[in-house]
Length: 257
Image (tube, rainbow, N blue to C red; front, side):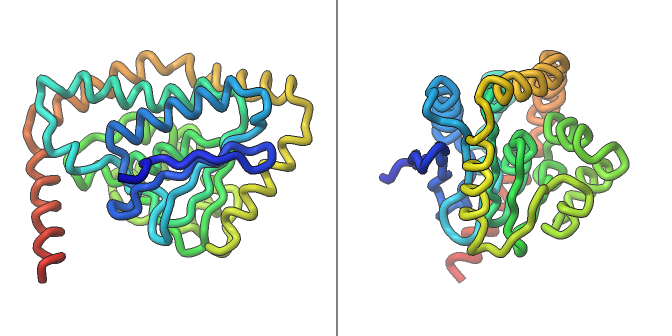
Protein backbone atom coordinates (compact mmCIF):
# COMPACT_ATOMS: atom_id res chain seq x y z
CA UNK A 1 0.00 0.00 0.00
CA UNK A 2 1.47 3.42 -0.93
CA UNK A 3 2.21 5.96 1.78
CA UNK A 4 -0.82 8.08 2.63
CA UNK A 5 1.42 11.17 2.83
CA UNK A 6 4.22 11.93 0.37
CA UNK A 7 7.05 14.14 1.62
CA UNK A 8 9.55 15.89 -0.63
CA UNK A 9 11.82 18.91 -0.52
CA UNK A 10 11.85 21.35 -3.40
CA UNK A 11 14.23 24.22 -2.87
CA UNK A 12 13.41 25.84 0.49
CA UNK A 13 9.94 24.24 0.69
CA UNK A 14 8.85 21.00 2.30
CA UNK A 15 6.02 19.59 0.18
CA UNK A 16 3.39 17.42 1.89
CA UNK A 17 1.04 15.67 -0.53
CA UNK A 18 -2.03 13.89 0.81
CA UNK A 19 -1.91 10.63 -1.12
CA UNK A 20 -5.32 8.96 -0.85
CA UNK A 21 -6.86 10.04 -4.16
CA UNK A 22 -9.18 6.98 -4.24
CA UNK A 23 -11.08 8.53 -1.30
CA UNK A 24 -10.47 12.15 -2.35
CA UNK A 25 -7.59 12.42 0.15
CA UNK A 26 -9.88 11.92 3.15
CA UNK A 27 -8.27 12.23 6.57
CA UNK A 28 -8.11 9.00 8.52
CA UNK A 29 -6.14 8.58 11.75
CA UNK A 30 -3.01 7.41 9.91
CA UNK A 31 -2.96 10.41 7.58
CA UNK A 32 -3.69 12.92 10.35
CA UNK A 33 -0.84 11.47 12.40
CA UNK A 34 1.54 11.61 9.43
CA UNK A 35 0.70 15.25 8.69
CA UNK A 36 1.20 16.22 12.35
CA UNK A 37 4.54 14.40 12.48
CA UNK A 38 5.85 15.95 9.27
CA UNK A 39 4.79 19.47 10.21
CA UNK A 40 6.75 19.15 13.45
CA UNK A 41 9.76 17.77 11.59
CA UNK A 42 9.62 20.63 9.11
CA UNK A 43 9.40 23.12 11.93
CA UNK A 44 12.55 21.68 13.53
CA UNK A 45 14.52 21.55 10.25
CA UNK A 46 16.41 24.80 9.66
CA UNK A 47 16.75 24.07 5.94
CA UNK A 48 12.96 24.20 5.53
CA UNK A 49 11.70 27.76 5.14
CA UNK A 50 8.09 27.07 4.16
CA UNK A 51 5.64 24.17 3.98
CA UNK A 52 3.31 23.48 1.05
CA UNK A 53 0.34 21.17 1.53
CA UNK A 54 -1.63 19.79 -1.42
CA UNK A 55 -3.63 16.75 -2.49
CA UNK A 56 -2.80 13.96 -4.95
CA UNK A 57 -4.94 13.46 -8.02
CA UNK A 58 -7.00 15.92 -10.07
CA UNK A 59 -10.19 15.99 -8.00
CA UNK A 60 -9.49 16.86 -4.37
CA UNK A 61 -7.31 18.78 -1.99
CA UNK A 62 -8.97 16.96 0.91
CA UNK A 63 -12.55 15.74 1.30
CA UNK A 64 -12.43 15.93 5.10
CA UNK A 65 -12.64 13.15 7.63
CA UNK A 66 -12.76 9.60 6.35
CA UNK A 67 -16.42 8.59 6.75
CA UNK A 68 -15.44 4.95 7.11
CA UNK A 69 -13.70 5.98 10.32
CA UNK A 70 -16.38 8.46 11.39
CA UNK A 71 -19.29 6.03 11.13
CA UNK A 72 -17.64 3.76 13.71
CA UNK A 73 -17.56 6.41 16.44
CA UNK A 74 -19.36 5.83 19.72
CA UNK A 75 -19.93 7.99 22.76
CA UNK A 76 -17.16 6.03 24.50
CA UNK A 77 -14.59 6.61 21.73
CA UNK A 78 -15.53 10.24 20.97
CA UNK A 79 -13.08 11.74 23.46
CA UNK A 80 -10.04 9.88 22.07
CA UNK A 81 -11.13 10.65 18.50
CA UNK A 82 -11.44 14.34 19.36
CA UNK A 83 -8.03 14.33 21.03
CA UNK A 84 -6.46 12.97 17.83
CA UNK A 85 -8.07 15.80 15.89
CA UNK A 86 -6.89 18.32 18.50
CA UNK A 87 -3.29 17.13 18.08
CA UNK A 88 -3.69 17.41 14.30
CA UNK A 89 -4.86 21.03 14.42
CA UNK A 90 -2.33 21.90 17.11
CA UNK A 91 0.55 20.75 14.90
CA UNK A 92 -0.29 23.57 12.47
CA UNK A 93 -0.24 26.10 15.31
CA UNK A 94 3.16 24.84 16.49
CA UNK A 95 4.70 25.49 13.07
CA UNK A 96 6.41 28.89 13.07
CA UNK A 97 7.11 28.77 9.34
CA UNK A 98 4.68 29.85 6.61
CA UNK A 99 2.24 27.13 5.59
CA UNK A 100 0.88 27.39 2.04
CA UNK A 101 -2.23 25.43 1.04
CA UNK A 102 -2.16 24.55 -2.67
CA UNK A 103 -5.85 23.80 -3.12
CA UNK A 104 -6.10 21.79 -6.30
CA UNK A 105 -9.66 20.51 -5.93
CA UNK A 106 -12.57 20.09 -3.54
CA UNK A 107 -11.82 20.88 0.10
CA UNK A 108 -14.53 19.84 2.55
CA UNK A 109 -14.98 19.56 6.32
CA UNK A 110 -11.59 18.76 7.84
CA UNK A 111 -9.99 19.76 4.54
CA UNK A 112 -11.62 23.16 4.90
CA UNK A 113 -10.22 23.36 8.45
CA UNK A 114 -6.76 22.43 7.19
CA UNK A 115 -6.94 25.21 4.58
CA UNK A 116 -8.11 27.65 7.27
CA UNK A 117 -5.06 26.79 9.37
CA UNK A 118 -2.72 27.62 6.46
CA UNK A 119 -1.20 31.08 6.23
CA UNK A 120 -1.57 31.46 2.47
CA UNK A 121 -4.12 29.77 0.23
CA UNK A 122 -3.65 29.33 -3.53
CA UNK A 123 -6.75 27.82 -5.12
CA UNK A 124 -7.56 26.30 -8.50
CA UNK A 125 -10.24 28.20 -10.39
CA UNK A 126 -12.52 25.15 -10.57
CA UNK A 127 -11.96 24.07 -6.93
CA UNK A 128 -14.50 24.58 -4.17
CA UNK A 129 -14.88 24.50 -0.41
CA UNK A 130 -17.65 22.83 1.55
CA UNK A 131 -18.00 23.19 5.32
CA UNK A 132 -19.80 19.87 5.32
CA UNK A 133 -20.24 19.04 9.02
CA UNK A 134 -23.89 20.08 9.15
CA UNK A 135 -24.57 17.69 6.26
CA UNK A 136 -23.05 14.66 8.01
CA UNK A 137 -24.62 15.15 11.43
CA UNK A 138 -21.78 16.95 13.21
CA UNK A 139 -21.46 20.48 14.63
CA UNK A 140 -18.77 22.74 13.19
CA UNK A 141 -16.84 24.09 16.17
CA UNK A 142 -13.17 24.63 15.31
CA UNK A 143 -13.88 25.18 11.60
CA UNK A 144 -16.52 27.83 12.21
CA UNK A 145 -14.28 29.61 14.74
CA UNK A 146 -11.34 29.72 12.32
CA UNK A 147 -13.58 30.88 9.50
CA UNK A 148 -15.10 33.61 11.68
CA UNK A 149 -11.59 34.87 12.47
CA UNK A 150 -10.96 35.29 8.75
CA UNK A 151 -14.27 36.37 7.17
CA UNK A 152 -16.41 37.59 10.12
CA UNK A 153 -19.63 36.29 11.60
CA UNK A 154 -22.27 36.89 8.92
CA UNK A 155 -20.27 35.10 6.22
CA UNK A 156 -19.51 32.25 8.61
CA UNK A 157 -23.18 31.78 9.49
CA UNK A 158 -24.10 31.47 5.80
CA UNK A 159 -21.28 29.08 4.89
CA UNK A 160 -21.44 26.83 7.98
CA UNK A 161 -25.20 26.52 8.44
CA UNK A 162 -26.00 26.03 4.76
CA UNK A 163 -23.24 23.51 4.10
CA UNK A 164 -23.23 24.87 0.55
CA UNK A 165 -20.43 24.94 -1.97
CA UNK A 166 -18.11 27.93 -1.74
CA UNK A 167 -16.53 28.37 -5.19
CA UNK A 168 -13.04 29.74 -5.66
CA UNK A 169 -14.14 33.14 -6.97
CA UNK A 170 -16.34 33.74 -3.91
CA UNK A 171 -13.68 32.48 -1.51
CA UNK A 172 -11.30 35.04 -3.02
CA UNK A 173 -13.91 37.82 -2.94
CA UNK A 174 -14.56 37.39 0.80
CA UNK A 175 -10.85 37.27 1.58
CA UNK A 176 -10.59 33.62 2.61
CA UNK A 177 -8.34 32.70 -0.33
CA UNK A 178 -5.39 34.82 -1.40
CA UNK A 179 -4.98 33.79 -5.03
CA UNK A 180 -7.05 31.92 -7.62
CA UNK A 181 -5.19 30.46 -10.60
CA UNK A 182 -5.70 27.81 -13.23
CA UNK A 183 -5.47 24.24 -11.91
CA UNK A 184 -2.28 23.62 -13.88
CA UNK A 185 -0.64 26.63 -12.20
CA UNK A 186 -1.49 25.90 -8.55
CA UNK A 187 1.72 24.12 -7.59
CA UNK A 188 3.95 26.48 -9.57
CA UNK A 189 2.42 29.49 -7.82
CA UNK A 190 2.65 27.86 -4.39
CA UNK A 191 6.31 27.07 -4.99
CA UNK A 192 6.95 30.63 -6.18
CA UNK A 193 5.39 32.02 -3.00
CA UNK A 194 7.47 29.66 -0.86
CA UNK A 195 10.64 30.86 -2.56
CA UNK A 196 9.64 34.51 -2.12
CA UNK A 197 9.05 33.97 1.60
CA UNK A 198 12.33 32.06 1.94
CA UNK A 199 14.20 35.19 0.89
CA UNK A 200 13.02 36.96 4.03
CA UNK A 201 15.15 36.93 7.17
CA UNK A 202 14.27 33.78 9.14
CA UNK A 203 14.20 35.33 12.60
CA UNK A 204 11.53 38.02 11.98
CA UNK A 205 9.54 35.53 9.92
CA UNK A 206 9.57 33.03 12.78
CA UNK A 207 8.75 35.63 15.39
CA UNK A 208 5.94 37.23 13.39
CA UNK A 209 4.29 33.90 12.62
CA UNK A 210 4.86 32.83 16.22
CA UNK A 211 2.98 35.87 17.46
CA UNK A 212 0.08 35.21 15.09
CA UNK A 213 -0.07 31.63 16.33
CA UNK A 214 0.08 32.86 19.92
CA UNK A 215 -3.05 34.96 19.37
CA UNK A 216 -4.95 31.90 18.13
CA UNK A 217 -3.58 29.62 20.85
CA UNK A 218 -4.85 31.96 23.58
CA UNK A 219 -8.40 30.72 22.93
CA UNK A 220 -7.47 27.19 21.92
CA UNK A 221 -7.99 25.34 25.25
CA UNK A 222 -11.58 26.55 25.56
CA UNK A 223 -12.16 25.86 21.86
CA UNK A 224 -10.93 22.27 22.19
CA UNK A 225 -13.09 21.78 25.29
CA UNK A 226 -16.13 23.04 23.39
CA UNK A 227 -15.33 20.81 20.40
CA UNK A 228 -15.13 17.76 22.65
CA UNK A 229 -18.37 18.62 24.44
CA UNK A 230 -20.44 19.33 21.33
CA UNK A 231 -18.96 16.55 19.21
CA UNK A 232 -19.53 14.03 22.02
CA UNK A 233 -23.17 15.07 22.29
CA UNK A 234 -23.64 14.71 18.54
CA UNK A 235 -21.98 11.27 18.46
CA UNK A 236 -24.03 10.10 21.45
CA UNK A 237 -27.20 10.88 19.49
CA UNK A 238 -26.17 8.36 16.83
CA UNK A 239 -27.12 10.77 14.05
CA UNK A 240 -23.64 11.23 12.53
CA UNK A 241 -23.12 7.47 12.35
CA UNK A 242 -26.49 6.96 10.64
CA UNK A 243 -25.93 9.76 8.13
CA UNK A 244 -22.42 8.63 7.27
CA UNK A 245 -23.39 4.95 6.98
CA UNK A 246 -26.25 5.89 4.65
CA UNK A 247 -23.96 8.03 2.51
CA UNK A 248 -21.41 5.21 2.20
CA UNK A 249 -24.13 2.70 1.32
CA UNK A 250 -25.51 4.99 -1.38
CA UNK A 251 -22.02 5.55 -2.77
CA UNK A 252 -21.39 1.80 -2.91
CA UNK A 253 -24.70 1.26 -4.70
CA UNK A 254 -23.83 3.90 -7.28
CA UNK A 255 -20.45 2.24 -7.85
CA UNK A 256 -22.17 -1.10 -8.60
CA UNK A 257 -24.76 0.42 -10.94
